[in-house]
Length: 333
Image (cartoon, rainbow, N blue to C red; front, side, top):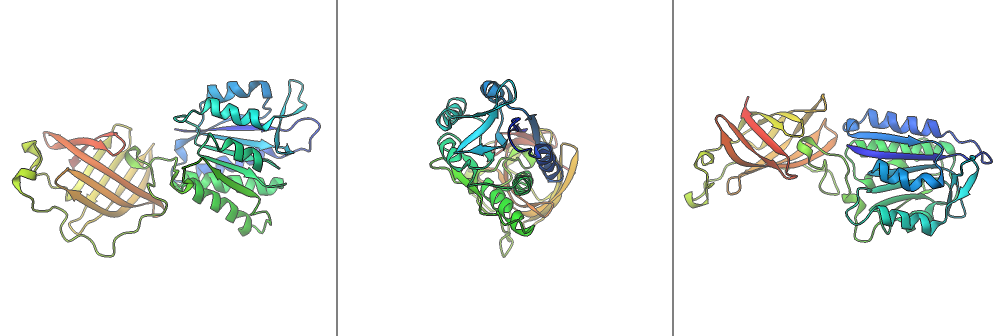
């Protein structure tokens, strides 16, 4: 589950913002997306400075989203009486550094507030991807960008592609603020390779910075002739042949019905959290290491790149793990 912590503040002395609408637009965009069921949003609509540490630790989010006001490169949160407090930029950045060590769960921060670009740059020392706003931004533009950004993430896009789609959504709606959002990344991190959702079996929906493209010609032979010394150590796997129609059940609860064709194509269905999606593309099999690899699309839209390592057999079924260590059992349908 991908947890989004939605923090919002609209202190008494500040202009009224449509913060609830922004969250509703985000939730609607996620709900309609392929992997929307993988997202969970927790909200705090009157975020107080004194509660910030507790909220970050208790929610243990993967994404932190702030919606509200900003000025002089500072976010404006609330005190106990609902009045505004400008948060010192270095203190907020250091908080993320303390909470999000190199192996921390926070992968993305979105500061959807005016004048937050400098604050975003400071937080990016400790978080893979951070979005800030250059100058001012209208309520309408902020909500439209956020809705498109999260919808794209829930379709399996990388953070960079989701960011670009968010900016493009402003252009499509003729909102002249598409250059206001700015994307920052931690040193050594390519936001084009940061993907949050999981594809069937639990593997990231995208492992490269671009959608996979089927080869121009399909493999002519999916199982190679190999010397007997190169065959699997377990005798029951020596004659394993992936061609055919298979039921695959993962320990994560995801189920596949997939047909491997002799020409290297595959098609079928993936049931993820009770929702069935179509899958199609190309597959390959390496008999040296018993690895089945897939490259294609989910619902014709979201990239699918995954692999399954066959490790043994039980009766008429085979078992193994995928490339994220998720266990599976497969049997001919």
